[in-house]
Length: 124
Image (cartoon, rainbow, N blue to C red; front, side, top):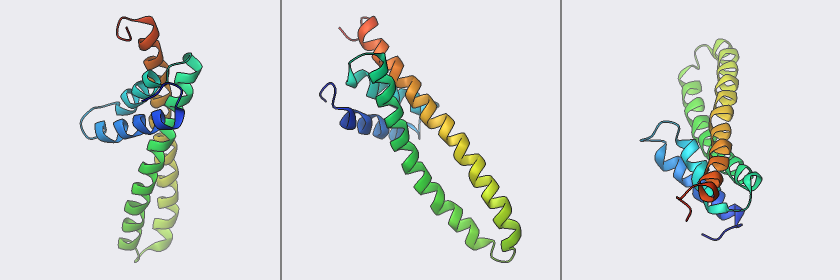
């Protein structure tokens, strides 16, 4: 991985988040940290690549969630009006919560990964 290859580093962070999500709590923090560490540059570069890794991770999670959401929608065809209002509210709450959790932790991890690379002995 080359420094300053933002797209590739963000994808690496998103993949790390996806893999670690099954085993590690706060996995977006670690995925963002990997992306920020690989990116190099200054703290703003780490923050930006961590944010981008979080957006990529969130996009994958939204696609998976929509499949589940549609599946529950098909099960609730007997009461579509009640499920429609409740389902939309549930979708919005989960989406905003996921946005804050995944993208926020990834951005913080990107900043932290950049910090670890330049301010500690890990990067040397």
